[in-house]
Length: 297
Image (tube, rainbow, N blue to C red; front, side, top):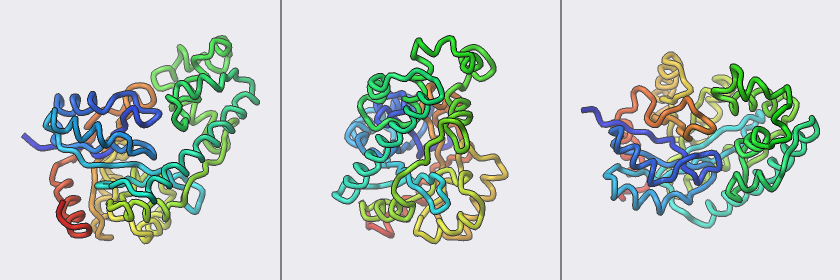
């Protein structure tokens, strides 16, 4: 039987993740994954739980994080960090990104109020478990607030064709660029995120490169010092996977595979390990790179 991996998974330590670390390791073992990485948004809180769960369920664990950065064209670019270790620079960076997220959340809430949706800010913080909220907690408040139940704008999300993935549709139609409640995202620069991961002993990998705005910018990000490319992603077509694999080989980058699994709330159509080509041999190459750069564990 093939040994399979998933190196892009979110737990409940990501505000938009549904499941505990223990549950994720149990599920990984059940479906036959050999190794996983929990890569929570701007958080390394999962590491102690994951180290323990790995022993219980016999699933290999690679410490990870997903840093939210802003590239020079204004786009969000997510940098995965593998084999990271906590240090003062990483801790300070995670705190700084969290403060940015609080600010963005407050602006988004005010924008949604401004276009007529009822919002209880205390409910948003509660839904986010008092962590810096992502868009998920904010959108859930829109749908859960009883004062919005009869809003005609939301009927398709409650009962119509958008109800099977309503958070994705609402984000695209209200919170994304040029939409009514859009707020420009703020965070650390992409180069800083890459450097912070390296300073914490980690290997920086560009997540889902499909969301880079063209090859010119992909080349620029590669030149900033990333060491890997998440060529195999649930967001990529077979043609895109082939292209990103070639790009990685041409630029001497390791290839990684990740689903970006969150659970049924924010990404109901993404399944754990739900990617093709997620062979354990990819992890072996990542390990070799880490050993060459950092030294044997």
